[in-house]
View 1 (spheres, helix red, strand yellow):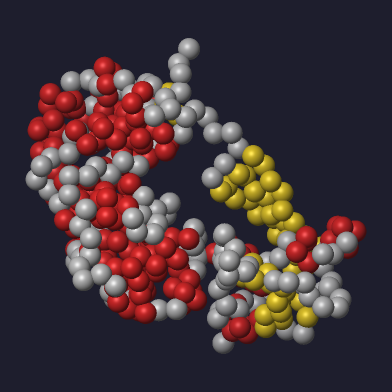
View 2 (cartoon, protein in one colour):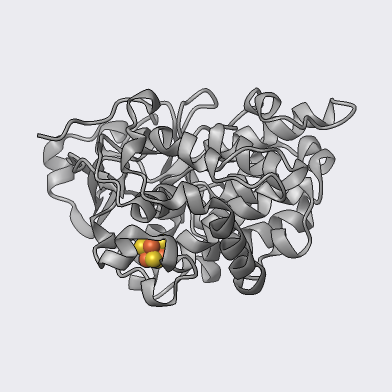
Length: 365
Ligand code: SF4
């Protein structure tokens, strides 16, 4: 029976194919492919430390095509660390609205303030790891790309490539423990020259060729070095333990009164969604279960967040009587574009309004 690897020390390098011996050829081949095929992304075409940092924060858990319009707007309003440091948190969150994982925006804001206070930005991965929101991957990406630091980026994409190159069937508990386990191998493949380009080439290969499903092995530049690609079973790697999903049901309510919508505003100190609005849950409104149960179902939404599979039902219910409980606010429909609504909630509100023959744009202009 296979055992789950718990840390990098437990990693068994004996399964590592002939790739280490062909390291230089692998590096050259990968880099040559990258120089020709890299997508012309803004942080590559006009590289700067600031753009690298902002793009790396935005790209955490988010696809490139989603990030591009956000980055463009961001750079117009906050063109450098000083401009971002001087902004209010409310404005920072407004520009981030819809990208999700809002702690990234708050941390990026704090990071800009920390950097703006320094005579020169830090250069080492250890120094960057001290800054808000910077984990091992982000520190490696920023310092290798901006300062040529010999730090390997290891995320799910890179693990996928490395495990396929070596056909390493070791079972890993999850993506994070697999990343730790593959870190020494990723570091050993890093060239002394242009480690930032090598890291970007690995990311690009994972994003555009070595897909999770149906990887494009026949056109892959490193097929000659890839054991799983040559054997025809790349989708067997990496070997990650199946995620145990938990199902959660949430009931949210849609209450209107005199042209306003009832929303819940999270406290400034809330761990998640601080200072952000959402459609309130039935518990937050404090309506009797019978009242909520009698409400009209307007929408049912399913989404996955980490290991949770969440089903959210939105029911139209009568406005609560008396004084609102803490956190509840009436927001005029005309002001819904001014307040910060979390991304899915803005989409749901829009969808419900469109279903009634109107839209946010019509109500707010
Ligand atoms: Fe991935 Fe296939 Fe390339 Fe191997 S040959 S790195 S499995 S795309």
